[in-house]
Amino acid sequence: MRCSFCNRELPKGSGKMFVRSSGEILYFCRARCQSYYFMKRKVKKLKWVKK
Image 1 (cartoon, helix red, strand yellow):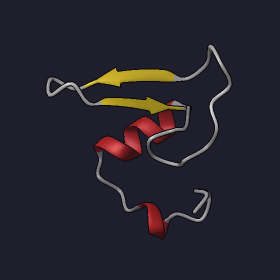
Image 2: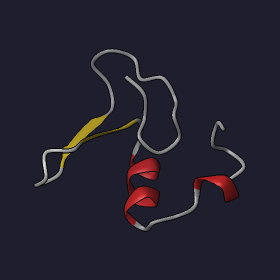
Image 3: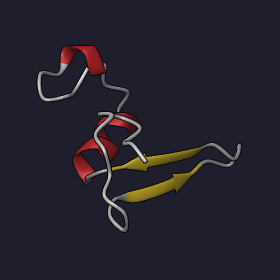
Image 4: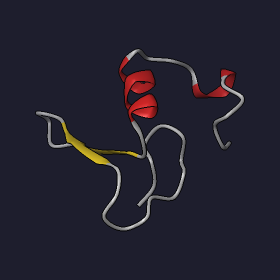
């Protein structure tokens, strides 16, 4: 699995899974990625994100 925001590899048993009402499943490696995703930040503008 990979983080839906920063595309970092998630080790098994870690991270957070978020399921939208539409059925879309999102995975996040940490709270920072989750909050940035919902604040609609641009991934391209962040230096710490793997591209």
